Length: 510
Ligand code: F6P
Image (cartoon, rainbow, N blue to C red; front, top):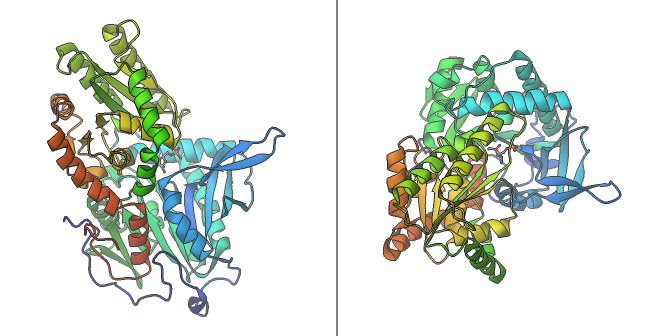
């Protein structure tokens, strides 16, 4: 098996008193040498993520209610949160004051409030119109505005302060993603006693691209407040280490970088899904019935192709539509084929996302206009989000899953499809530029910039023999089941706690 952790070896410092396996052990031993200011909180495990793991709804009398937002991250971290008395710090997604500490679904939550200006300058601006395009290889041009940067610093400071306030002496703090890259250092400045991990869910770009960021040194220094930096792919970790050398003038050794007397490790920990939980949903009678209904509603086609994406320019939806349109024109998929494209609404106030929506919807109507017959259309386009049960039914209904991202940190949709295919049928067409391509060796790999290659792969996947499908699907299913999201969380937290670094690529569970 391929190793994806950078230079695994012995832990670089003495094992800590904290035992972060699945649970976080008592932080009492560290309290004695804690460097904090004596105002620490009570939580031994603190998750700091852009979003809360709940969505706000309103009861008929206008009272705020919180509904769990199903997601891999929360299902992975829930057991750790419960065992260790954890707390989750995040934003609700709406402009307005913070809801204050509250409990939902038995989890302790702390909301961060963002003003309307901060939503515009921090979330829509610096996070999603500067960092997002920059970190995805400038597929869309990033914009650099000093006002947006100032908002990013201010909002990161709010998250960091909340973490400082909530963390018990010697706590473990796990910060997530590109929205919060300054938090590790901001916490470190106030709390020498805590252990800090950071995981980047999106790619970390090559230095020639990262170097465009006017605040590149500050971002590197912000991240280096952590003890362990996790990335999706080995190349992301390598890119980060190079940024440490070039932007901050630091010396790196293997997978580590030294800052004063601290040694910081950067390695790959590819994220995954709750494969078992999703498979259980897919096996439900109601879901299987729904999947048959979907095929019936589509007119019982011979082949159902499926795309499931946030409507984001990184996902390569126009490429997929173009390839599909040409295949229809050439008749290479036969007459009884349907593409179902779920494009869930995302970041709709950001310019590049509005432009993309127009492009995609124009192309869908062009294809349908040209090839539809009365009562049936070759593209079923759904600009909506669906509950997990409906998604599982769609995955079961699809013969071929299409993932044509131009750049993607991981792409969990590919893994979700595989987890649902318990009868070992189906095929995946998968972009090389996704983290998932490192793991799903049974997929038909494509370069999304090579339209002819994409077309050929779709044709091969649609015509796959049952035996070949089984062989490929078995390989992929084993990988996804063994390296599920719980494995990911355990590997990261175990390494953060100073357990010997394991090869992430190993087939056994940690
Ligand atoms: O890592 C990418 C990510 O930030 C995910 O955490 C999230 O699900 C997705 O992009 C959408 O993000 P948001 O709606 O918060 O902008």
